[in-house]
Amino acid sequence: MTERSSSTVVLMCGLPGAGKTTYAAGLVRRGYVRLSIDEVVWRRLGGRDAGVVLSEAAFDRLKDEVRAEQRSELVGLMRAGRNVVVDYSFWSRAARDDYKALVESHGCRWELVHLKADRATLERRLAVRNGREGANAVTVGEELFGRYLARFEEPRGEGERVVPQGEGERVEEPQGEGGLPQPSP
Image 1: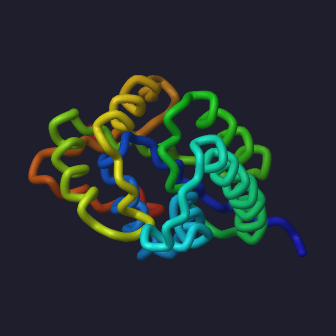
Image 2 (image 1 turned 180 degrees about the horizontal axis):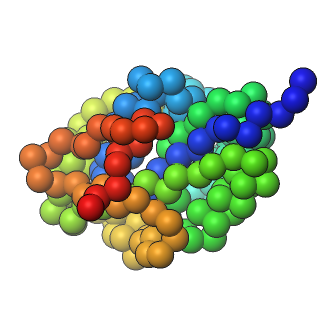
């Protein structure tokens, strides 16, 4: 079997509440495979009602384990010629650069989509999301949100496509060739 190199891997980037998962779902409807650490961790822990409480260190180890598994899955998907959306926050430039290099090393193309929202929009969306159940409704309280804000390294000059959020409170659906929005003029 020969390796196909036509895959596109979309790396979602943004703070909690920016709309990464909603945007990624639009790509899934266009045939992309979605990788999400949150969903796998949620399943392994049995959901919120399972009563499983992990220390921060144990939770981080579980997320690292799932990330390693999904990284291997990503390689397999690229080899199979599948388009993939990696629904992580990609909060650090180092993580973004690492994944870009991985994608390029397999002869594939990456797209970095930064869903950018102001703090008021994020807080409003998180207030709604925090009342929901499910893997894609991980509760982000004020303290955790503050840590995310402090640690987030906004992409600048990394080949990112910025998708502004906030107006009308609806996440822009991916459009255009390859399922991605067309660049702004």
